[in-house]
Figure (cartoon, each protein chain N blue to C red):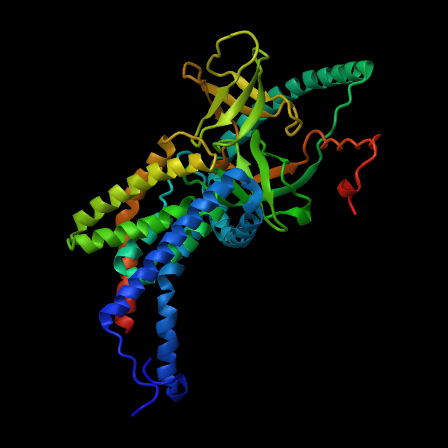
Length: 176
Length: 301
């Protein structure tokens, strides 16, 4: 905003607030996906993809400014509380994911789809192993296998989440 | 000339400052995350109130969203029932006759058992039904296998109560808010249920493994090998679960530890019943008055 708020006309004020509201959309979409993960569907294997990780990963790549590490931390706290995990597992690993995505995006400009998917797969696998370790630190000792199964479904769910986020991103840019 | 003079900051310097602040904030965020983890280990209960708030926010949402889908499912089921009526009626009549015979035997046994209980003066607590509720949420990521129901302390549900369905044990209540409760399912990696193996009478623990099956661990008594089809029922040890609630059936006796399939599958259960803990919590012993004089500094004001 270049001129004081009082000097703005009604249309400009609406645009001003709308621009602010749009900045919250990545966070809101991510929270909605986390909420969807608590649907009362019971599957015998941990087949539900970790949408929290995927959403944070994709937004950190599409809109780094709108998915800073502190926001990933807040989202991670909500995810831990809703998934009945020790508080701090997602709250630590999601900011780490954002930092890793930022570093890799700064180093490699290659954004072909296959490269992105491969990179996502590596991040997701690393996430599963680190999650295992952090759970052990928090006092929950368990096998690695369920986490790897979930990592597999998360990798498979990547294209769908990228498609959804890309559609939202295009809508946002078209609105401007 | 204007006053104050226009600030002359270079763009690069501003960027540098912002990057520095960003790095500091990121470091602080990561440190906070790790601190939270350590706190979780030291005191797992510190986030209970936050968890209850999160569950209370989500459970009403799902219990509101669920009915249309349930209605659609019920309609499809009703159509199937209508087509299947005659064979089903015949099947049920046969089953009913068999069950009536079994019931007669059971009534005799129950009377026998009650007489024996009276003879040796066994006190059998009767766990009362608190509420019947429908699942309103689940978390099936990674290790945690929990479900939510839209009933809470207002309905008399508190942590540490038994949750069962028609088929068998479902789990226990873990965290209760005013209107929503989180249930710990049998398959959760932290779930431990004291069971008895019906055929051998051995005590054991049915341990959740974050998958479809339970692990049968810590079997006591003689080393009798398990066989496929061995039934596990609650033993009543610990006082939370009443004895003789069906828990699981052994499906893989050769594995180490052996694996058992729970009777109650949350995917197919509509409603669960929350019942009181089998034995009431013991009263804390009243501390005897100290016989020695207490120094003034140690007295409570």
